[in-house]
Image (cartoon, rainbow, N blue to C red; front, side, top):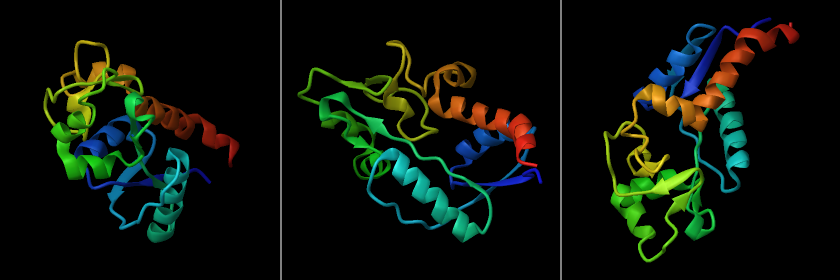
Amino acid sequence: MALTKLNFITGNKNKLAEVRSILGDVIEVDSQTADISEIQGTVEEIAEEKARRAAEVINGPVLVEDSALEFSALKGFPGPYIKYFLDALGLEGLNKMLDGFEDRTAEAGTIVRPRGQINFGWDPIFEYDGKATFAEMKQEEKNLVSHGHKALVKLQQWLAHGQEQLT
């Protein structure tokens, strides 16, 4: 039996719009929030547990999104705890964490002073190509390099073609 509906666990309308724009042709995407406490661990452990707990709360299939921002100078910190650091410190505070370090690189980019419109968390401080932050890029341009977009495209392909193997 093919999956026809997926619950995306988010309260962020911009993330929901992005997911629907990618998956909407192959599956109905609803949005729900679930009050789920996060465990400490690796990105993979946190995402897996978040999905398991959300599926229990929703009592059905879910899609969860969890990201990490790893500063090279801080040996990967704050990593999967970026959401809490962003909430507590803001974009400027994240920048100040790197003041005093020559290395301002992060996984797949560089941390810069905030530039661009704030739609997705830390996009205004994440410079990918040495020219533009994710927040300054057009959506199509960001989609070419965004790990989240690439993952959603793979899910879309699986939903469109891979499920036949399950029936």
